[in-house]
Length: 156
Image 1 (cartoon, rainbow, N blue to C red):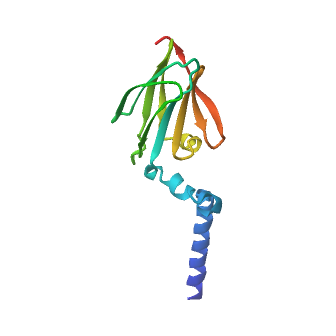
Image 2: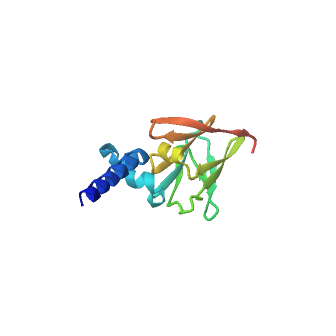
Image 3: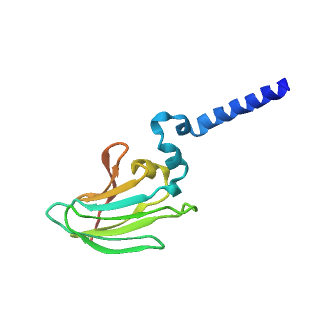
């Protein structure tokens, strides 16, 4: 009987050790939200924003869609945005793209796809794309800065 106790204790210790290195956020008190969010992004309600921050009161035309949902064409004045919310599928195939145009330039870009680096930059909830004069930026919420991700293509 004593031998069984030792073996079960060893198994428990080994399990804790494996979990600690495989899923460090499980044991971290400072990231209490991370357990659910990082292990099961399918349960998160995602929000994607496309914001017009173009100068000179330029309008931004945005047409965003996935393979299942077409969000229509939107004419965004400076400072306005389009936003939508959804949950990813269990097959990790959820992807949204946007075609945006401004005076003399256009761009087709991926606004959401299944990628842990994107999730981290979006703060595991809000992906905020900002159209500026030189391109489209992603607000990196974890680093608290805007990252230029896509440059405008001349012409439409």
